[in-house]
Length: 538
Image 1: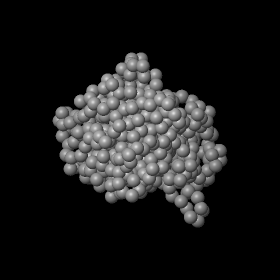
Image 2 (image 1 turned 135 degrees about the vertical axis):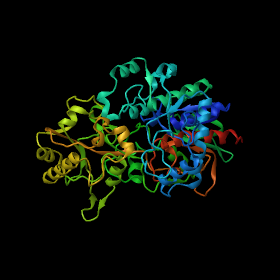
Image 3 (image 1 turned 180 degrees about the vertical axis):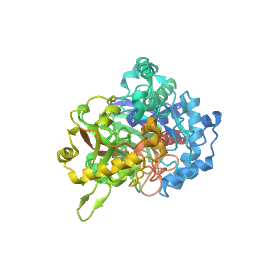
Image 4 (image 1 turned 90 degrees about the vertical axis):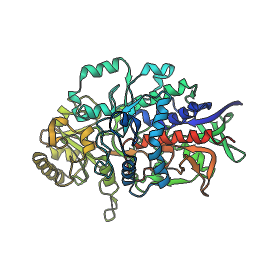
């Protein structure tokens, strides 16, 4: 039997796990970070990598002072009354302090200027300039040393490009006008941005503090002694990792577990946007010992995507990278639009509409439809603009023929396109108000087209369609308190057990989906878990 003994064991190498591990190592604890998969970074590595942090020091240093009261008002508006008040307050009041601690341990951070509070810039207390959005400072892959090739790949931002860069460069729809020389330089020199950059910054700081990391080690059960969690048993039943002060579950949600997705999400045709290793391990291990679970009132962490057949049906977030661009709409089987396509939260919300008379989800299946002018100007599922549409994208010379090919009512779709085209010409979507979202225009609009940044007619054949799928951050997780302690079903903390990131329920954000709050919550509560464990020696 191989016994390994540490002060703290952390499961999962995304932002939440790395934040917890670094905070523990920064306080002098011995830490073992275990990653079930062969790659580092979890969902964070494939994300845009921002952290929402009101009243932070970086903003103050830039002369963009923020008001914590206003930040709290905005967070409460986003939550819509469904967050746990103590956890929401804990996030808001600790965000700036945790960012300071990360930087004191060597994590390079900077403001993602240009990103407004997303996705509710109209909410009370909101900011429009990015002073609350924090992202990783540029870092080269070589800084990761021996772990440099183990970083999970990302497909949304080009190498070395951050979400702040995207906003400052005119948005994803303006990619054809980005500086090709600068993009090539960043790729050649191995610069990392967005989620990959954040993972690299946290990992490098953690390793410099003497932290221990192991890949391909999955935990199968928690080990208890003296009524507290004191370690984990791994896939080899003879392999136990002992933890003197606690175990942090930061191993993602159940996005790759079809049974749990059906049980808790209830939407058909789910597509996992994260690693296949996200099987709900943390929730399963904890509930075996009486842990309580919590379901968000409305899961606004869902995304609109499509499957990329050439990449093993990998999830691609077309709700941000495609559908908001001018010249694309979403239609249901009746050929009708059903939402503001530029805001993926509205698309997902519309997916939930169930028609009791027809006994089916009225807006599923759904397709993104676009024309050849769109293909010439914008990227299709991440490919460079102007390339031929991939073979897996449906294509036809007329709208009627395309409708028949994808099983959509032709008359309805032709009427819908004609109506939308007039809106695009006039510059106002009278049906759903598309193009009014400040956030969506900042990152997914065509900056060259002014008020037509997200409105363009579909009038240039041939026409194309891509089936839309839903996936994202799951809405159910372990119930935790303000210290990230996992709560027992009888209302008390389970000693020595913590959870953060997508393993924990989104009790601090409620129904709101504020950009940067998901990773922010994981990192912040990961650090709070380490702080509590450091002061809770058995």
